[in-house]
Length: 485
Length: 95
Image: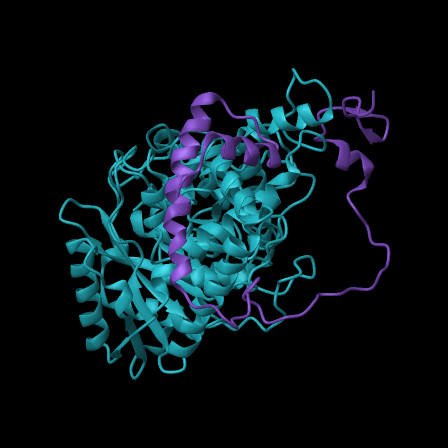
């Protein structure tokens, strides 16, 4: 086993015991990135000097006995997180040369724990996509099969874990952008409850849905990362001031007596047979561990994708108005006058998917259509939220697939945005309801592609989700399989 | 749902985007298909349903109106494509 294969908890104990130094760990990860990144393209920017400097500081903390469980752990973050002094592109040409003057709170918190930064990870442009194909830095490939997409929008964050290029990563999830790539790359990925982790310094896509979360090799690591980034931040006005529980302490409590709901709207005819098979096997594992299953109904599920693509695009059209070539970002060279400069800068800087979503959102908010589209979608959102509230009165968790199929082929859905949008059908409702959910490895398709299981928890119910995920992981070996890259 | 090239041009103007002829045709078709799909929301009876703007049950987040440290003029201007002294420089607005 090499350093790049270790989990956070394995590497951390080797660092604390001085079997490995943080600088050695950083150096090995950097050379592994150099060897594998041409095949995967999960990194937009690699930061070798920063990594060695961080690791040197970490070794001093370890020697002085002032280390945390994350000190010296090599991590990488999606290029959507502002990292002071380190280029942050958000996968867009419009921010090609943007050097942030401050850092995202979530990244700042990891930094304070003494992690080593390896670099910034590939993503769909402005987090708009389900395949990582809309990145201005080029597509990212799935380490399990390089002809397949890694998922999106946090494609690089999941691919880097699967390719053993980082011990843990951070992503963001607006409609499934952590869970779907985690599922396609056989990683653990958690979307915390809206308000659990600060959004400050995370480049905004759809502010009422965006949430930060970890992608890791196992559930223990996911708990360590969540504990590090969770908590109230006065700089994020929708951050919630509620105590952060000890996520690690609850992990081993098992699922005996837990009531898990199976929403019938998620087990549909269109589900890939291998996904169905993995779900059936997972349910059997949980039954064996003493969990109880009940069929439940979330009747408005079928309206979630339509609701999402109105709300998310409306918010995006407003959020992305800030890119006007004045304060930061690309400015067109050949413009006449202020409005022309702004229009040309935006048109040259944004890619096709971003333009398409800005257009849809502008339409949904435009005079004469606002009530019919945007307000209607906000009302549908209320109904979708109520589905979850009612169901959680009776069950502790919900178990569903993450995606209807394993990772699709590169190029397969590029020309059909509606089909691409529909691939997020099982993840989107969770963002609309604002609650938490985790993707974890649950098997492989006949042709060797990873399949993920989604556990959906109550708002601020991350403890139960992690506990159930841990129990599944202890009873199975899917999370220990390695992509051959 | 029918979205014409003229509709696309109008929306692009509102969004401060210029599109090529190919892009206009592409978007007209794709936006028509996507907006056609979202029409299904019309099936829902939302009479008396309160719209949700975000999932957190909270009111406004207020703070004291006091001066706090900020990133400063130099940092704020560091990424600007053009500056003049302590200002952002833009093309002439008034003829």
